Image (cartoon, rainbow, N blue to C red; front, side, top):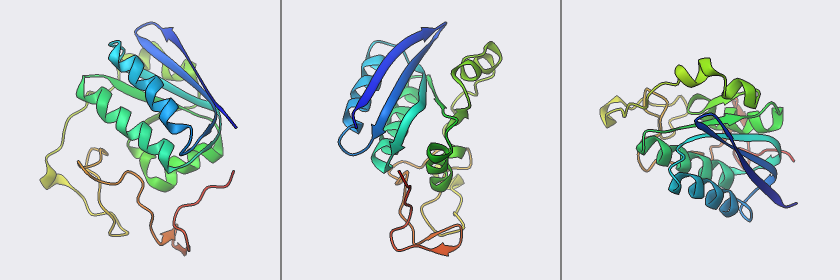
Length: 170
């Protein structure tokens, strides 16, 4: 399946609507679309994944990279999804603690959410926690340390052995 990307404005926020499958073949298209917005100075982004039917680790990598990019420019990146299969990808990888995830575009762009968006504060490497699995840890503020794999493949998910690590069904 193809990937569709369109954009719209909601006040000071740019909403990027994404549909289809985000995988190794289509992730570069998403990266280009998000980079185009950032290059144009639009660094407060809402990425609407409600029409996404599948997302693999390549898609997550694009989102983590763009999150770092917009934060480095004083911006924000919010995720919208109400689909369990997409939310599960964020939860399994722990990225649900890194991204602000909303159930709807209206919720993500509400004036209360826009005003209360936390400023990104970099955490010193000495404040890195050790994850229970012993995998590379996240900063105490939920951000990934520089060079950390945003979606490490581990041998267990929720305590059950897995041959492939994190796998998400289509």
